[in-house]
Each structure stands twice: as structure tokens, then as C-alpha cells.
Length: 119
Image 1 (spheres, rainbow, N blue to C red):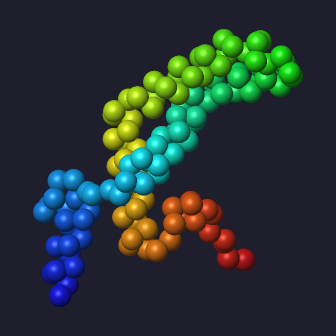
Image 2 (tube, one colour; image 1 turned 90 degrees about the horizontal axis):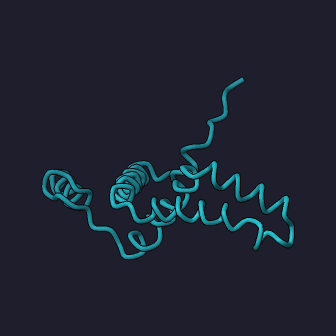
């Protein structure tokens, strides 16, 4: 029975019996792009900061005054969204998180939190 479970896990998680893990539609079209957006914002942090600063300083007129910052931010984010290597990187990270959740039952955001230290 254990050998069967291992073989099934290898097929599902892209082990030796399979080259590609099967992801659900919601994972490829929603969850991985969400991860990409978060990571792209981190990679474009300087442009995000410049746009936020411009918007705070301009108030109501930000639509007109912050066009240059907005365009730079959009270019940076779009470059990451359209990069197939970036998608594959995020996909692999998502798969690793998914496998870790399957193994431990603990969501990734809870694993990242600091564990309380003993007194």
C-alpha cells in the first residue's frame, strides 16, 4: 500500500514518474498570477515608492502630475508579468509551497511566522 501511495505522489507532484505536475485552472489562472503580482511589486519597489510619494504630494491632481511615475511603474510590472521565466519561477515556488502544505498541513503564511520562544 505504501509503494502505491508513493507512486501516486510521484505522478501528482512531478516525481520520477511524471515530468509535469497537474495544476488546477484556479492555480494557473489566479493563484500563480497573484504570486507574480506580489513578487513584481517587490522587484519594482522603487517605482512603487516613487508613484506613492507622487500621489501623496499631488492630492487630487495626481492623475495629471504622476503620469510619468505611473508609466514607469506599469512598464516595470508588465515586464515581469509577461516574462515566461518569471512565471516558471513563481510556478515552481507555488508547487513547493503546495507540496509542503500537503506534507505538513500548515499553510505557507503560518510557516513564515516566527515561532514563540520559550522563556
